Length: 145
Image (cartoon, rainbow, N blue to C red; front, side, top):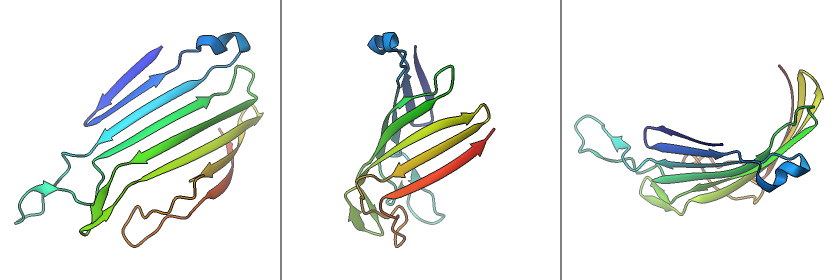
């Protein structure tokens, strides 16, 4: 099944066709998201309307995930976020590409352990001017539902 959802300047397409992997008992879910902020305007009173200079025009997210099966077990996935070029206070930024991955294990019917690696390429970037993001990070999470 292919689902398309559309919001204001945002389209997300989710493909969850088992395809050739169905015989192996695997289901992969691929996602593609594109956000266009080109129309985001600076509406500061007394100033001419202009595009927000500190927001990238395009951000794209591509991901693939193997969700939990009917008996639990393991889930894993990865996603890449591609952020287009933008300027902060007149200083150009070439954008960035960030790759994240995770592995989840269902320990009990209501308990999930997750290991998440973010920014696998150790990309140096600052989502807010003057506040650089950490490099490669590894997170452990235990959740109950």
